[in-house]
Each structure stands twice: as C-alpha cells, then as structure tokens.
Length: 90
Image (cartoon, rainbow, N blue to C red; front, side, top):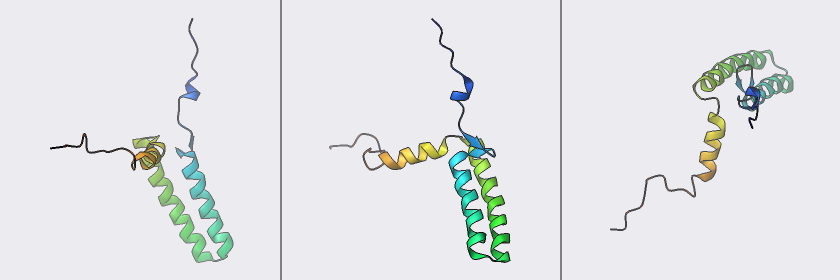
C-alpha cells in the first residue's frame, strides 16, 4: 500500500524567503523600536537594520533552511556529548 506524502509537509516554513520565526522576530523588533522611541532617526536606522537583517537571513536560509533548528539542537546537546571522539584512557 502506498501512502501519499505531500510536499508541503516536507518543506521548511519560510516567510519572505527566510526562516519564519527569525523573520517575524526581526520585523517585530524593527517595528517596535521606532514606535516606542518616536524618533525619525531611529525609524531610518530600523529600516536599514531590517533590510540588512533580511538579506542576512535570506543568505542563511539559502545555504541551509534548517540552520536555526540544527544550531539550537547543537546548543542543547553540547554539554552532554563529547565531540572530540572517543576519550583515550592511556
């Protein structure tokens, strides 16, 4: 019996061509700072940071779409796993 696996279930979640959570976090920060500070200079600075951050996230997503999940898993297990191979007892 063959089971259909839909392609949309296998693709990573992307928003504006980047990882969804990181893009939404960047957007939230770049909207909140000028609204809370009410300064034109901060608004221009946040627009620049949004453009640069979006370009950086797109580059990261093109190289490896699951980079964020892999890095978070590495941080979670790095204290428990010895990455240097088998320890020598000599």
